[in-house]
Length: 374
Image (cartoon, rainbow, N blue to C red):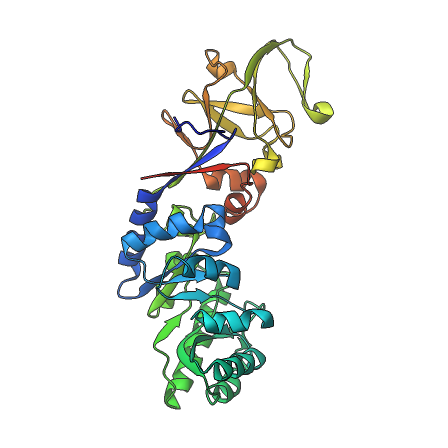
């Protein structure tokens, strides 16, 4: 049961920080001697970057990755360890990046020149990692141009070249040929650069999927985000055991006996074929419950799976309580997590929505209270 709050929300997410710490340590052990960058972009996927970061520092995390300057500043105000922006920069982010000692990506010659110019203007060195596009097709120096372009970038003043990296496009499948092609392209580039005397202290390619499926991609640093929370991609091989860290819960608002023939929800998409105890739960798609769970998902009440009936609406949904006739208003409802011997996972919701687990976690709305447990 959650702790009482002055104005408690109707739906809450329990985040077990101890499980996150254990997961970090398990990942670190798996990839050793490579180091681990903990990726906390999008406010740690909406879970709360600062409390998650505190837990990770306690576990030994020495570097954080984020998507943009605002996220980097949030962490920089609390932590002095290296904070790295991944993939790309907007031009107006560059002065603050240099000023606040944020590690910056160089995905192209233009960004390199802008960073160099600003570093010289501020009379500082800016630490950078060169990003190479080996097949993602999003950001980075295309691999077929990388040798020449990197040679030009390395001549620019004000830049401290700490690292070089790339990003997988299909690492969630252990047999995907494109991923092995990306690894080979990256390895060949590194070999050619080394032959010309260009050495980068940090080399990284593996993301969470890469860690699970392609050990040859570890190099000397890996990046992980979603695996920190004990969540895996649906297709990926699970190379190690992780601890679930998230539970999404609400409570029953009302229980009613409705007659056979009664229709449920918008559009009347479910018709009761017998007299049925129906429970109403004050949570809906505005909170991140997938609309696709309409007439297909389940919740757990008193250790029993109760089917969602009717269409999930913005603020409410209804369930069939036949399996749990003793349920009453105020009973705990589990969307994600355990109740008795039953469990629903983030991956289960992803299958229902026909998406991936990142989408489920990032969709949890602002009305969802975040409660941090030891």
